[in-house]
Length: 113
Length: 110
Image 1: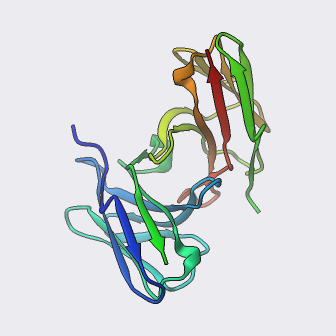
Image 2: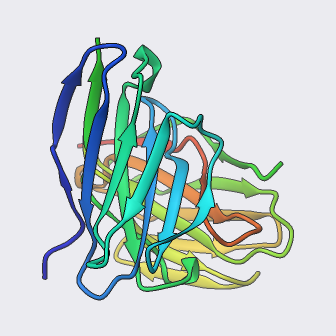
């Protein structure tokens, strides 16, 4: 079975640009979450979506937005990129509640120059 | 504020030298304590979920335990392939997110 797939794997953007990251969950998983991981830190929660509805939002500015599609795949959008947005962006999926455990993708490495 | 603290930040072991990693959490009414392994440039790989004090789970050379305030990841007779960053996380009070610690980077030399 395919795991959580994310695209692209690497990305270089210029300050002020916009970026879209994509995630396909494990088949049958209806919940997708996004995390940002800066080098040397643990992942930090950005969004959770379940059945196409936002269920949770972390402490990130409005430049960050996301959505989930009818096939449960998801996009994370970041506007007006800053140097500090450079990080590994992780997508995770689960069947439902958190207590079932999350499966993470390999992430998208975003570098803002 | 919910917080997860891991110690030590880094740990160097010789092959076969057993040790433990610590994770302290602050969420009252714990809904789940998670351990993940992360290799460089990869996403976290799920290891264990613990739900109640006294619970223990094992997988190969790893054993996770849980008390009311802490969790421990015991590594018995580690091998170089166990070298990775080990992340601990708890569920936030809303049940919508994982709160991660900074991780413990384990290096095992032969």
